[in-house]
Image (cartoon, rainbow, N blue to C red):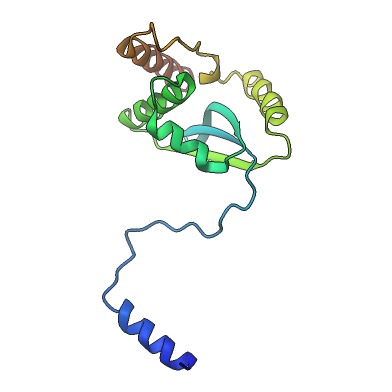
Length: 153
């Protein structure tokens, strides 16, 4: 089949397809190790609220979407994201390739703390076998409210 025939056939198949509602990822991430900072935009500035690292690239973010209660960090971060969204904030992810994610996370954490950002990293975890889901959710929401309050000062 010639290029022209393939292009014509593809055009015919795609004629009634509308992809305008889809976002586009323009490059696949071929590097697994990243450091990332979650934040929201407040007064036109990026307000970080969590710093982490992963050897699964942005696959780690799926754990926050699931927010399983048995995984304290996943639940904390996932619930914080949901609550920021309920409060009307858009959650943003800043990330970059990292050769040594744990080292980079340890470098970035004090940099952010040194700028007086409140980080969810500081909210104590819990034992899922004895903790109450609603009480933990409320602690997270109170912490997010504190982050927002500090940002607005």
